[in-house]
Image: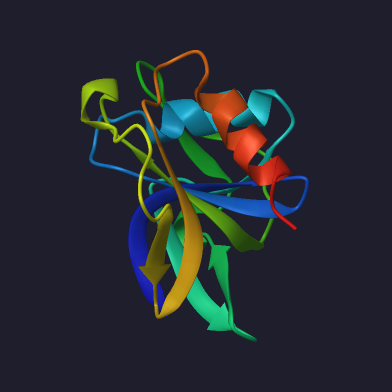
Length: 137
């Protein structure tokens, strides 16, 4: 099992791991996705395991069902116990994002997963995530 600094939501059952440094907007983006129908899996830290060749994300027990609302604190939300990771989203400032990456994938625990880079604070961040998920088999 690997513990990674990331949030995770499930969109129509597909896990989306959102990575980035503190203050980059991981929880903010997760909250907007949840508000639009996604399910919380984990915020701030995810446990990742490989099961049958797929990554599975869960929340550490002490963080299950909790998410940070910057400017308020930690709130409890309904949550999904686990999700098969379909997409990794790395958040960074728009100016640092490569427009057309050669290989939009990354590896976690020896498993290659599709990867998308977004500025978490742009209005289109959620739409980009849904568009990429919609193209997956």
